[in-house]
Image 1: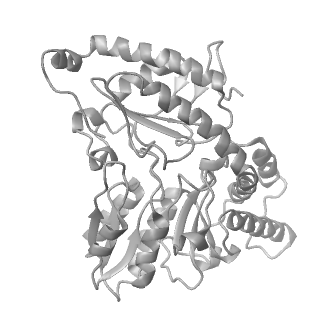
Image 2 (image 1 turned 45 degrees about the horizontal axis):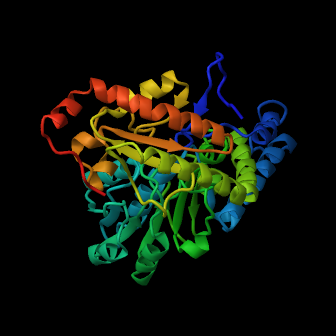
Image 3 (image 1 turned 180 degrees about the vertical axis):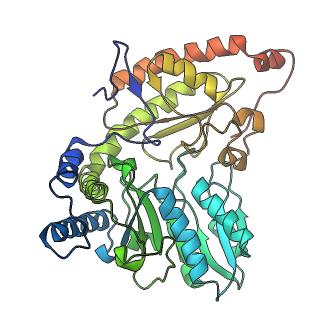
Length: 404
Protein backbone atom coordinates (compact mmCIF):
# COMPACT_ATOMS: atom_id res chain seq x y z
CA UNK A 1 0.00 0.00 0.00
CA UNK A 2 1.35 3.43 -0.95
CA UNK A 3 1.10 5.53 2.22
CA UNK A 4 2.56 8.75 0.79
CA UNK A 5 0.21 11.14 -1.04
CA UNK A 6 1.56 11.33 -4.54
CA UNK A 7 1.96 13.54 -7.58
CA UNK A 8 1.97 10.62 -10.00
CA UNK A 9 5.53 9.54 -9.14
CA UNK A 10 6.06 6.23 -7.37
CA UNK A 11 6.57 6.68 -3.62
CA UNK A 12 8.46 4.21 -1.43
CA UNK A 13 8.69 4.86 2.31
CA UNK A 14 11.69 3.06 3.83
CA UNK A 15 12.05 5.00 7.09
CA UNK A 16 9.94 3.13 9.64
CA UNK A 17 12.57 3.59 12.36
CA UNK A 18 11.85 7.32 12.17
CA UNK A 19 8.11 6.80 12.53
CA UNK A 20 5.24 4.59 11.42
CA UNK A 21 1.94 5.64 9.87
CA UNK A 22 -1.02 5.54 12.22
CA UNK A 23 -2.95 2.29 11.87
CA UNK A 24 -6.55 2.97 10.72
CA UNK A 25 -7.97 0.96 13.63
CA UNK A 26 -5.88 2.99 16.03
CA UNK A 27 -7.22 6.25 14.60
CA UNK A 28 -10.80 5.02 14.87
CA UNK A 29 -10.23 4.04 18.49
CA UNK A 30 -8.75 7.46 19.31
CA UNK A 31 -11.38 9.66 17.64
CA UNK A 32 -14.07 9.63 20.38
CA UNK A 33 -11.51 10.90 22.91
CA UNK A 34 -10.91 14.01 20.83
CA UNK A 35 -14.61 14.85 20.81
CA UNK A 36 -17.34 13.19 22.87
CA UNK A 37 -15.15 11.49 25.49
CA UNK A 38 -13.16 14.57 26.52
CA UNK A 39 -13.37 14.14 30.29
CA UNK A 40 -10.42 14.62 32.65
CA UNK A 41 -9.49 11.20 34.11
CA UNK A 42 -9.15 12.75 37.60
CA UNK A 43 -12.76 13.95 37.62
CA UNK A 44 -15.10 11.83 39.75
CA UNK A 45 -18.15 12.32 37.54
CA UNK A 46 -19.08 9.97 34.69
CA UNK A 47 -17.20 11.54 31.71
CA UNK A 48 -14.00 11.63 33.75
CA UNK A 49 -14.41 8.06 34.92
CA UNK A 50 -14.96 6.86 31.35
CA UNK A 51 -11.66 8.51 30.37
CA UNK A 52 -9.95 6.90 33.35
CA UNK A 53 -11.33 3.49 32.38
CA UNK A 54 -10.00 3.95 28.82
CA UNK A 55 -6.53 4.71 30.16
CA UNK A 56 -6.54 1.62 32.36
CA UNK A 57 -7.64 -0.55 29.44
CA UNK A 58 -4.75 0.87 27.39
CA UNK A 59 -2.40 0.14 30.28
CA UNK A 60 -3.52 -3.48 30.20
CA UNK A 61 -2.97 -3.68 26.44
CA UNK A 62 0.55 -2.26 26.63
CA UNK A 63 1.42 -4.49 29.58
CA UNK A 64 0.14 -7.56 27.74
CA UNK A 65 2.44 -6.82 24.78
CA UNK A 66 5.54 -7.17 27.00
CA UNK A 67 4.13 -9.70 29.53
CA UNK A 68 4.00 -7.25 32.43
CA UNK A 69 1.52 -6.25 35.13
CA UNK A 70 -0.62 -3.24 34.16
CA UNK A 71 0.44 -1.44 37.34
CA UNK A 72 4.05 -1.44 36.12
CA UNK A 73 3.29 0.73 33.06
CA UNK A 74 3.81 4.50 33.35
CA UNK A 75 2.63 6.51 30.33
CA UNK A 76 4.94 9.25 29.04
CA UNK A 77 4.99 11.65 26.09
CA UNK A 78 7.68 9.73 24.17
CA UNK A 79 10.43 7.16 24.26
CA UNK A 80 12.94 9.94 24.91
CA UNK A 81 11.04 11.01 28.02
CA UNK A 82 10.84 7.40 29.18
CA UNK A 83 14.62 7.05 28.75
CA UNK A 84 15.37 10.28 30.62
CA UNK A 85 12.90 9.31 33.34
CA UNK A 86 14.51 5.89 33.73
CA UNK A 87 18.14 6.98 33.94
CA UNK A 88 17.75 10.20 35.93
CA UNK A 89 14.91 8.92 38.09
CA UNK A 90 16.75 5.76 39.08
CA UNK A 91 20.11 7.44 39.66
CA UNK A 92 18.56 10.04 41.93
CA UNK A 93 16.47 7.43 43.74
CA UNK A 94 19.57 5.34 44.50
CA UNK A 95 22.18 8.07 45.05
CA UNK A 96 22.47 7.17 48.73
CA UNK A 97 23.68 3.71 47.66
CA UNK A 98 26.28 4.85 45.14
CA UNK A 99 27.06 7.27 42.33
CA UNK A 100 28.20 5.08 39.42
CA UNK A 101 26.14 4.56 36.23
CA UNK A 102 26.98 2.34 33.26
CA UNK A 103 25.73 2.94 29.69
CA UNK A 104 27.03 1.94 26.26
CA UNK A 105 28.41 4.09 23.48
CA UNK A 106 25.60 3.06 21.11
CA UNK A 107 22.77 4.49 23.22
CA UNK A 108 20.14 6.90 21.91
CA UNK A 109 20.90 10.57 22.55
CA UNK A 110 18.20 10.73 25.24
CA UNK A 111 20.27 8.30 27.31
CA UNK A 112 23.65 9.83 26.47
CA UNK A 113 22.40 13.35 27.23
CA UNK A 114 20.90 12.15 30.50
CA UNK A 115 24.20 10.49 31.36
CA UNK A 116 26.06 13.75 30.76
CA UNK A 117 23.52 15.54 32.95
CA UNK A 118 24.21 13.06 35.72
CA UNK A 119 27.97 13.57 35.34
CA UNK A 120 27.49 17.30 35.84
CA UNK A 121 25.42 16.48 38.93
CA UNK A 122 28.23 14.52 40.57
CA UNK A 123 27.67 11.02 39.26
CA UNK A 124 30.37 8.92 37.59
CA UNK A 125 29.43 7.41 34.23
CA UNK A 126 31.16 4.58 32.36
CA UNK A 127 30.56 4.49 28.60
CA UNK A 128 31.09 0.90 27.49
CA UNK A 129 32.73 0.20 24.11
CA UNK A 130 31.19 -2.18 21.59
CA UNK A 131 32.63 -4.51 18.95
CA UNK A 132 32.50 -3.95 15.20
CA UNK A 133 28.92 -5.22 15.06
CA UNK A 134 27.77 -2.98 17.89
CA UNK A 135 27.49 -5.68 20.54
CA UNK A 136 28.01 -4.88 24.21
CA UNK A 137 29.98 -7.67 25.88
CA UNK A 138 28.34 -8.84 29.15
CA UNK A 139 31.83 -9.52 30.49
CA UNK A 140 32.74 -5.88 29.87
CA UNK A 141 29.67 -4.87 31.86
CA UNK A 142 30.77 -7.14 34.69
CA UNK A 143 34.32 -5.74 34.66
CA UNK A 144 33.01 -2.15 34.79
CA UNK A 145 30.93 -2.66 37.93
CA UNK A 146 32.23 -1.09 41.13
CA UNK A 147 30.85 -1.01 44.65
CA UNK A 148 29.30 2.35 43.72
CA UNK A 149 27.39 1.08 40.66
CA UNK A 150 23.64 1.68 40.97
CA UNK A 151 22.20 1.67 37.42
CA UNK A 152 23.03 -0.06 34.12
CA UNK A 153 21.29 1.08 30.92
CA UNK A 154 21.93 -0.77 27.65
CA UNK A 155 19.87 -0.24 24.51
CA UNK A 156 17.92 -3.25 23.25
CA UNK A 157 18.65 -2.41 19.59
CA UNK A 158 20.08 0.63 17.88
CA UNK A 159 17.88 2.23 15.22
CA UNK A 160 21.07 3.20 13.37
CA UNK A 161 22.71 -0.21 12.97
CA UNK A 162 19.93 -2.63 13.94
CA UNK A 163 22.02 -4.94 16.15
CA UNK A 164 19.99 -6.61 18.92
CA UNK A 165 21.95 -6.59 22.18
CA UNK A 166 22.31 -9.54 24.62
CA UNK A 167 20.09 -7.84 27.20
CA UNK A 168 19.13 -11.05 28.99
CA UNK A 169 22.77 -11.92 29.66
CA UNK A 170 23.57 -8.38 30.80
CA UNK A 171 20.51 -8.34 33.08
CA UNK A 172 21.79 -11.51 34.77
CA UNK A 173 25.04 -9.69 35.55
CA UNK A 174 23.04 -6.81 37.05
CA UNK A 175 20.78 -9.13 39.06
CA UNK A 176 23.74 -10.99 40.57
CA UNK A 177 25.00 -7.69 41.98
CA UNK A 178 21.63 -6.16 42.89
CA UNK A 179 22.04 -3.35 40.35
CA UNK A 180 19.02 -1.78 38.61
CA UNK A 181 18.88 -2.63 34.91
CA UNK A 182 17.17 -0.50 32.23
CA UNK A 183 16.89 -1.05 28.50
CA UNK A 184 15.81 1.37 25.80
CA UNK A 185 13.47 -0.86 23.77
CA UNK A 186 11.97 1.88 21.61
CA UNK A 187 13.25 0.26 18.40
CA UNK A 188 12.24 -3.28 19.41
CA UNK A 189 8.90 -3.03 21.23
CA UNK A 190 6.11 -3.99 18.88
CA UNK A 191 8.62 -5.15 16.26
CA UNK A 192 10.00 -8.28 17.93
CA UNK A 193 8.61 -10.33 20.84
CA UNK A 194 9.47 -8.87 24.24
CA UNK A 195 8.91 -10.52 27.60
CA UNK A 196 10.21 -8.36 30.44
CA UNK A 197 10.22 -11.34 32.80
CA UNK A 198 12.39 -13.35 30.42
CA UNK A 199 14.68 -10.38 29.71
CA UNK A 200 15.08 -9.79 33.44
CA UNK A 201 15.14 -6.00 33.23
CA UNK A 202 13.83 -3.63 35.90
CA UNK A 203 12.87 -0.83 33.50
CA UNK A 204 12.06 -0.73 29.78
CA UNK A 205 11.25 2.22 27.52
CA UNK A 206 8.90 2.19 24.51
CA UNK A 207 7.21 4.56 22.05
CA UNK A 208 3.84 4.10 20.33
CA UNK A 209 4.81 5.56 16.95
CA UNK A 210 7.30 2.71 16.46
CA UNK A 211 4.44 0.21 16.16
CA UNK A 212 1.75 2.10 14.23
CA UNK A 213 0.55 4.13 17.18
CA UNK A 214 0.40 7.91 17.62
CA UNK A 215 3.31 10.26 18.15
CA UNK A 216 3.35 11.86 21.58
CA UNK A 217 2.73 8.59 23.42
CA UNK A 218 5.35 6.49 25.16
CA UNK A 219 5.65 4.35 28.24
CA UNK A 220 8.12 3.20 30.84
CA UNK A 221 7.86 -0.24 32.40
CA UNK A 222 9.01 -0.14 36.03
CA UNK A 223 9.20 -3.51 37.74
CA UNK A 224 7.05 -3.91 40.81
CA UNK A 225 8.93 -2.82 43.93
CA UNK A 226 11.43 -0.60 42.09
CA UNK A 227 11.48 2.95 43.44
CA UNK A 228 11.92 5.81 40.97
CA UNK A 229 11.96 9.59 41.46
CA UNK A 230 9.55 11.47 39.15
CA UNK A 231 10.92 13.90 36.60
CA UNK A 232 7.63 15.79 36.30
CA UNK A 233 6.12 16.78 39.63
CA UNK A 234 2.91 18.49 40.65
CA UNK A 235 0.12 15.93 40.35
CA UNK A 236 -1.06 12.46 41.30
CA UNK A 237 -1.37 11.08 37.77
CA UNK A 238 0.31 7.76 36.96
CA UNK A 239 0.38 6.83 40.62
CA UNK A 240 2.20 10.04 41.48
CA UNK A 241 5.12 9.12 39.26
CA UNK A 242 4.38 11.39 36.30
CA UNK A 243 2.32 14.54 36.83
CA UNK A 244 0.18 16.27 34.22
CA UNK A 245 -3.25 15.77 32.72
CA UNK A 246 -3.08 12.59 30.65
CA UNK A 247 -3.13 12.69 26.86
CA UNK A 248 -6.12 10.36 26.73
CA UNK A 249 -6.43 10.03 22.91
CA UNK A 250 -2.72 9.21 22.52
CA UNK A 251 -2.74 6.73 25.42
CA UNK A 252 -5.83 4.99 24.05
CA UNK A 253 -4.15 4.87 20.65
CA UNK A 254 -1.00 3.37 22.12
CA UNK A 255 -3.06 0.67 23.81
CA UNK A 256 -4.83 -0.28 20.59
CA UNK A 257 -1.54 -0.22 18.64
CA UNK A 258 0.00 -2.54 21.23
CA UNK A 259 -2.90 -4.96 20.88
CA UNK A 260 -2.55 -4.98 17.08
CA UNK A 261 1.24 -5.28 17.24
CA UNK A 262 1.05 -8.29 19.54
CA UNK A 263 -1.50 -10.16 17.43
CA UNK A 264 0.18 -9.49 14.08
CA UNK A 265 3.84 -9.62 15.07
CA UNK A 266 4.85 -12.96 13.57
CA UNK A 267 3.28 -12.09 10.22
CA UNK A 268 4.95 -8.65 10.20
CA UNK A 269 8.37 -10.10 11.08
CA UNK A 270 8.14 -12.66 8.28
CA UNK A 271 7.09 -10.02 5.75
CA UNK A 272 9.73 -7.46 6.68
CA UNK A 273 12.59 -9.89 7.11
CA UNK A 274 12.13 -11.21 3.58
CA UNK A 275 12.32 -7.68 2.14
CA UNK A 276 15.19 -6.72 4.45
CA UNK A 277 17.30 -9.65 3.31
CA UNK A 278 16.63 -8.81 -0.32
CA UNK A 279 17.78 -5.22 0.26
CA UNK A 280 20.96 -6.35 2.04
CA UNK A 281 21.82 -8.87 -0.67
CA UNK A 282 21.18 -6.37 -3.45
CA UNK A 283 22.97 -3.38 -1.94
CA UNK A 284 26.08 -5.37 -1.01
CA UNK A 285 26.58 -6.14 -4.71
CA UNK A 286 27.56 -2.48 -5.16
CA UNK A 287 31.35 -2.05 -4.81
CA UNK A 288 32.69 -0.37 -1.67
CA UNK A 289 29.42 -0.57 0.28
CA UNK A 290 29.46 -2.11 3.76
CA UNK A 291 26.71 -3.41 6.02
CA UNK A 292 26.69 -1.89 9.51
CA UNK A 293 25.57 -3.91 12.49
CA UNK A 294 25.29 -7.68 12.64
CA UNK A 295 24.06 -9.47 9.52
CA UNK A 296 21.71 -11.93 11.23
CA UNK A 297 21.12 -10.77 14.80
CA UNK A 298 19.44 -7.51 13.85
CA UNK A 299 15.98 -5.95 13.69
CA UNK A 300 13.89 -7.85 11.14
CA UNK A 301 12.86 -4.66 9.33
CA UNK A 302 16.25 -2.91 9.31
CA UNK A 303 19.13 -2.65 6.81
CA UNK A 304 21.95 -0.12 7.25
CA UNK A 305 25.09 0.61 5.27
CA UNK A 306 28.01 2.95 4.80
CA UNK A 307 28.91 3.90 1.25
CA UNK A 308 32.45 4.93 0.40
CA UNK A 309 33.22 8.26 -1.30
CA UNK A 310 29.69 9.67 -0.90
CA UNK A 311 27.89 11.69 1.80
CA UNK A 312 24.64 10.36 3.22
CA UNK A 313 22.77 13.59 2.61
CA UNK A 314 23.49 13.45 -1.12
CA UNK A 315 22.12 9.90 -1.29
CA UNK A 316 18.98 10.91 0.60
CA UNK A 317 18.33 13.83 -1.73
CA UNK A 318 18.76 11.81 -4.91
CA UNK A 319 16.68 8.93 -3.56
CA UNK A 320 13.98 11.41 -2.61
CA UNK A 321 13.95 12.71 -6.18
CA UNK A 322 13.06 9.17 -7.20
CA UNK A 323 10.32 8.96 -4.55
CA UNK A 324 12.37 6.77 -2.20
CA UNK A 325 12.47 7.95 1.41
CA UNK A 326 15.13 6.67 3.81
CA UNK A 327 17.44 7.99 6.54
CA UNK A 328 21.06 8.69 7.35
CA UNK A 329 21.65 8.06 11.05
CA UNK A 330 18.86 8.37 13.63
CA UNK A 331 15.94 10.79 13.27
CA UNK A 332 17.37 12.75 16.21
CA UNK A 333 20.78 13.29 14.58
CA UNK A 334 20.28 13.27 10.82
CA UNK A 335 20.39 17.10 10.62
CA UNK A 336 23.38 17.50 12.92
CA UNK A 337 25.92 17.37 10.04
CA UNK A 338 28.39 15.40 12.12
CA UNK A 339 29.49 11.80 12.25
CA UNK A 340 27.24 9.45 14.20
CA UNK A 341 28.74 8.42 17.57
CA UNK A 342 27.20 4.98 17.03
CA UNK A 343 29.09 4.46 13.77
CA UNK A 344 32.33 5.79 15.23
CA UNK A 345 31.94 3.42 18.19
CA UNK A 346 31.90 0.37 15.89
CA UNK A 347 35.11 1.47 14.20
CA UNK A 348 33.79 3.22 11.11
CA UNK A 349 36.28 5.96 10.09
CA UNK A 350 34.97 9.51 10.45
CA UNK A 351 34.88 10.21 6.71
CA UNK A 352 33.10 6.96 5.90
CA UNK A 353 30.56 7.52 8.68
CA UNK A 354 29.35 10.54 6.68
CA UNK A 355 28.18 8.06 4.04
CA UNK A 356 25.69 6.22 6.21
CA UNK A 357 22.26 5.22 4.99
CA UNK A 358 19.45 3.31 6.72
CA UNK A 359 16.44 1.52 5.22
CA UNK A 360 13.65 0.29 7.47
CA UNK A 361 10.50 -1.50 6.44
CA UNK A 362 6.86 -1.94 7.36
CA UNK A 363 3.80 -3.90 6.33
CA UNK A 364 3.04 -1.38 3.59
CA UNK A 365 6.23 -2.15 1.69
CA UNK A 366 6.19 -4.55 -1.23
CA UNK A 367 8.69 -6.63 -3.15
CA UNK A 368 7.96 -4.43 -6.16
CA UNK A 369 9.12 -1.38 -4.19
CA UNK A 370 12.32 -3.14 -3.19
CA UNK A 371 12.95 -4.09 -6.81
CA UNK A 372 12.44 -0.46 -7.84
CA UNK A 373 14.87 0.70 -5.14
CA UNK A 374 17.50 -1.88 -6.13
CA UNK A 375 17.22 -0.70 -9.71
CA UNK A 376 17.65 2.99 -8.86
CA UNK A 377 20.15 2.91 -5.98
CA UNK A 378 23.20 1.62 -7.93
CA UNK A 379 22.58 4.31 -10.56
CA UNK A 380 22.48 6.96 -7.86
CA UNK A 381 25.71 5.66 -6.31
CA UNK A 382 27.46 5.65 -9.67
CA UNK A 383 26.27 9.16 -10.47
CA UNK A 384 27.37 10.55 -7.11
CA UNK A 385 30.75 8.84 -7.34
CA UNK A 386 31.33 10.40 -10.72
CA UNK A 387 30.99 13.80 -9.03
CA UNK A 388 32.79 12.88 -5.81
CA UNK A 389 36.19 14.45 -5.03
CA UNK A 390 36.74 11.58 -2.57
CA UNK A 391 36.44 9.07 -5.40
CA UNK A 392 39.03 10.96 -7.40
CA UNK A 393 41.42 10.86 -4.44
CA UNK A 394 40.91 7.11 -4.20
CA UNK A 395 41.66 6.67 -7.87
CA UNK A 396 44.81 8.66 -7.25
CA UNK A 397 46.04 6.09 -4.77
CA UNK A 398 44.26 6.59 -1.46
CA UNK A 399 43.17 3.49 0.45
CA UNK A 400 39.53 2.55 0.77
CA UNK A 401 37.84 1.14 3.85
CA UNK A 402 38.30 -2.58 4.43
CA UNK A 403 36.62 -2.96 7.81
CA UNK A 404 33.87 -5.35 8.94
